[in-house]
Structures are given as structure tokens and as C-alpha cells.
Length: 184
Image (cartoon, rainbow, N blue to C red; front, side, top):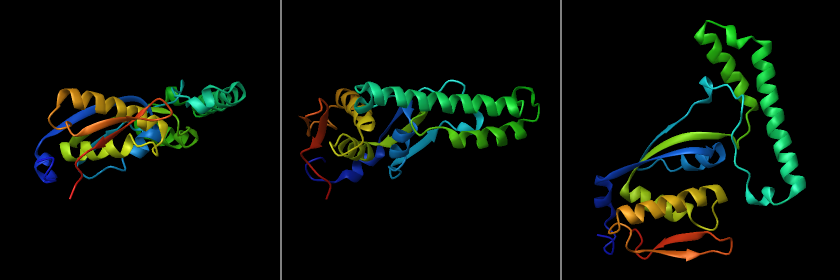
């Protein structure tokens, strides 16, 4: 099936991955892969951001001035969320609809780097495609790390479906997962 390129056969089986604490930057990249997938992402309409979880990219993490500025901005966003909740006394609102409307308004100042949760079900053809695309050295670094882990899991769990993939190390310490056989 792999060498003939008849990938439609791979669409009959599926798998599901739950991604927790990935950034909304990463999840926005993931949801671009709608074909062959089903997606559910945590909504911020029901979440107040009292403590924003986020991942600092290595380019920022390894520069003291940049890391300090990055953290300062996140803390300002957290403080603004808390102050808005106080202004509207959201903790004491009994009207759920009103709370949801306010929380939805507050999320407009949430940073894209905010951690979220997303569940994706892939048919196997789509999973192969997304792994190839998102481990590419041209992809954003967080999604490369995430789909590098997905590849490691998938290639161990379903070795026959990923037997044609090769791991090619990249200069940044990650890898690209490249299939020998391509779609026709």
C-alpha cells in the first residue's frame, strides 16, 4: 500500500492524540490540517486566566533580556485578566450567560502563547501527512517538537504504517520525518 501510493486505504483506520499545554500558536497551526481529522479544542470562553501557562521558545529563553520582557508581558496579561474579573465582580455573578460573555471579552487580551488543550483524531493517511509537514525544518519549532513526539509514538505503535519514514537530524537538534513513498 505504501509503495503503490494508494493512501486511501489508510483512511479506514484512525487514532486519537490529546495535546495538553501546547500554545494556541501551536494549536492554530494544528487546526489547519482539517482534512482527515476531527478536532476539539478547549474554549477560552469558559476559562478565566488567573495563571497563564506558556512555553518560552528557545530563542527567547536563552536571552536574559528577551526572557525578562516575555515574562513581563505575560504577567501584565494575567494582571489585566484579574482586574477585569474584579471590575465586573465575575466571581459573584450568578448568571452563567453573563459570565460567559464577559469571559469571552476578557480573552481578547490573552496572548497567543497561552497554553491550551486540544484533541485530534487522524485517519492514518492524514497522520502520515501531518507528521511529514510538521516535522519539517520549515515548521514552527513548538509544533515540530510536538509532532516529533507524535512520530516517535506512531512509529513504535504502528511500525508497518511508518516503516518507510526516515528520521533526518536537523541542525537545531530536532529531526524531520520523511517518507520514502509519497502520495500519488
